[in-house]
Length: 240
Image 1 (tube, rainbow, N blue to C red):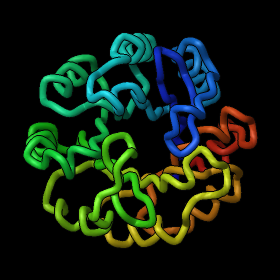
Image 2: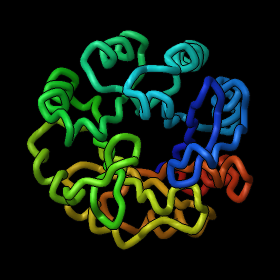
Image 3: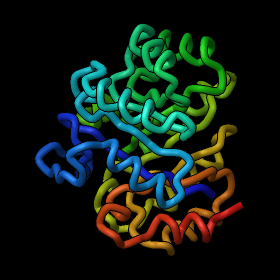
């Protein structure tokens, strides 16, 4: 299992939120490139990037910051989500050299685009499933659909999706431990490897996730920034 540091970008800065609430913003780095350098220096080979402004307004608002990160560290794998809602935006990031693209809301709101993206860029698209009590949320977590995450996985099982990120919104940024039960349910229902997200606060949380079948990795956010877990130590612990 691979721990993946998260860099959430808002107004050009590296921040963390609680449950996606904009009023809970805390700035950790004025320049997200410094955050990337910090985690890479500690051993990160893959980093999770989120354009928070893009997630809310549907545009690639923080393109310049993301471009700077990728050009500064061309050999690091980056997965990016937030504001990718049309092919033009997706192509711009492909041309920039971003490795994987997280598409979430559009899997429900614009299935044609989602399917086209998966077929145009096989094994480059990550399905982002952000859920509350098992139901998929959309529009930067501001709306909850009547679609179960497990049903959506079943609907797209024939597409050349690379991986799935499963985020329990109620756990995100709260440092109260991941939702093991729902993550396990989703991982067992998926033919694609699953990356767990939301709630990781200590090494024991990662240990529990590592025992589940079909878990590729876990996104680590606030716990890293607050120092309750150390990236170099957990990378050594889960070294393959």
